[in-house]
Length: 104
Image (tube, rainbow, N blue to C red; front, side, top):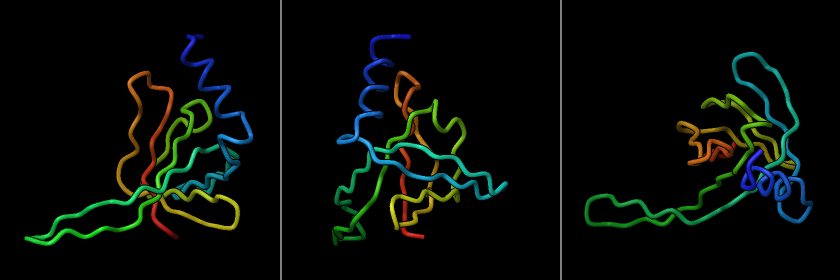
């Protein structure tokens, strides 16, 4: 295990950094508990001459916890349900998925 992988494991198991969540497959209804680091940055979208600011929700998940996320899968964080939209992206080390979510 690389030093970076060990650091990611510590970050994702730390209660103040990551939150428990539940992944539910859209195709097989398989469920799996995971830990996520949530981010909610504003997103700027340009349309013609206008610029619109909207909310977004993104989470980081360890590949070890969730090997194959797909668009349409459900992520439940606390009482809030979100659907994965767009293709999941992995980091350079192939350890972390970044998932773009929308409210379910």
